[in-house]
Image 1: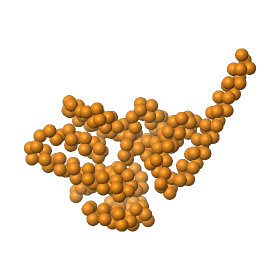
Image 2: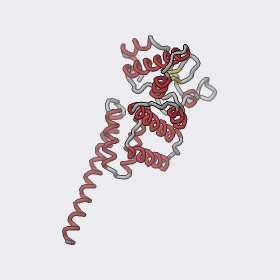
Image 3: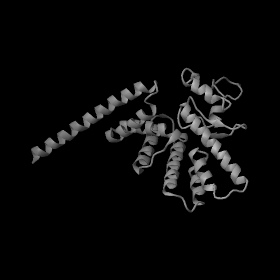
Image 4: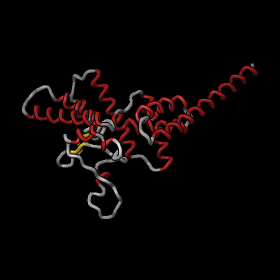
Length: 246
């Protein structure tokens, strides 16, 4: 990003609204704040997040472009405004605050989200759908954080994501990319062409413009084609067998 987005005039303008902070993980023993990435729950490079003056996480941008940064900053500002209005005694704002905090991923566990949601008796259909997506996103995040190392761990994670996929509610925001990426890999190993195509289409939508992803996408498209053609051959053989036996 330092050779692209961060050098653009758009980012320069946006950066005037915040205090930019860059931390580089070096693995140099004894270096100050060396474990900052892991302490803040970072899962890869780069990890992007908004922090307050005390270093507490406020939220993560939903994308890696200035428009997403601006949208996230606006949402965080709205949360602060709601908190101030509630503290001043204004009524009927707690459900709005809950939904805004939910959108920013400010709840740490599935249990916390579900418990908080129970306190609201008149949620709209749209709000209930938003809560369901947030719960799924948190389930994906928890599964990622607890993933065992190695191929076996990745296979178990893929199986969990396939179960979530079959329920028909998918994560959004920061967990969207990992979810579809791991599901794509799992579907490929299972030679599940239908699921792999859906996951690959989402991977292309999310990462298609990223230079690093172009080779991976081409590789997976070729793999999907091979699986689809192989599946067609199997079906044809079964049909011929049935006709001969008949």
